[in-house]
Length: 284
Image (cartoon, rainbow, N blue to C red; front, side, top):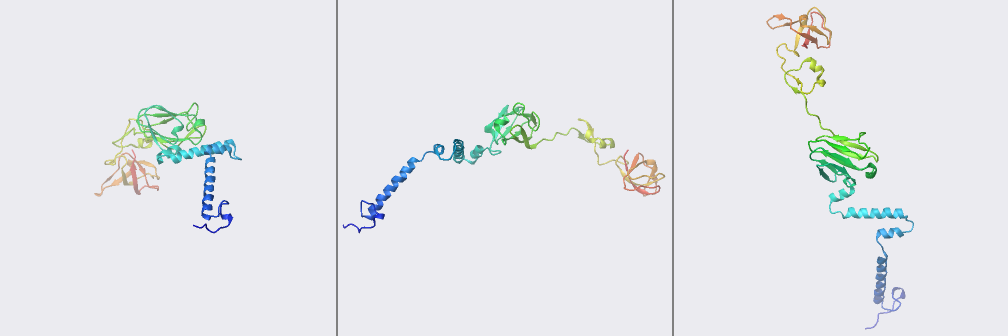
């Protein structure tokens, strides 16, 4: 078979006039060049230390970033990735004994399921500003959050967490602040039955634990709290003022009338003069 017609040497290897053979020779040379480049590439953390214009500190930071991103990207699940990142509420750590929060607890919910214990916290300077963890008392005891040494939480040396209470604790770098804190309401300390007198109505917030206080919708015939339309007799009664029942008269359909017992208050917004009829309420 005759050789192909000669072509320009710019497209051929110098040792042959065959274009196809020249192309193969050039391709082989290119592959050798690529392989040499691959062999010269070093791992990122080694290469960064030799790059021109990069300080050792910058190289170390970039290497750490590369390692961190490699860890995150290699995490097997979203839950593991969230834990690596320290995202809030990334995991629940159930506790039933004294414990101290450490760096690995960033973002976790420390959930006490029983008992009364102390939840310590590592040094604020070690955990760093912005470090956050959640806490909850799911038991029936009392959990005492006690920061490191003389460090404070919400301006106090300790924080008491009662049953059902929860929140977030955030580090400022030197102290701790709670966010979204919930506080359980205390149980009722007084029973409600019978009826309420005007004296208790004025002092309801001061009732002692165990005291019996009554409220009744039915005040009975002429009982305290009753309201009635009555005629004022001899004395004028200003708005809000009181008057004895003897100064008032009530009328029955039969035409009979009489004065009620007790003390009554003018609950209208006007003064009731002698002979006028208005609404009064018995207060005593």
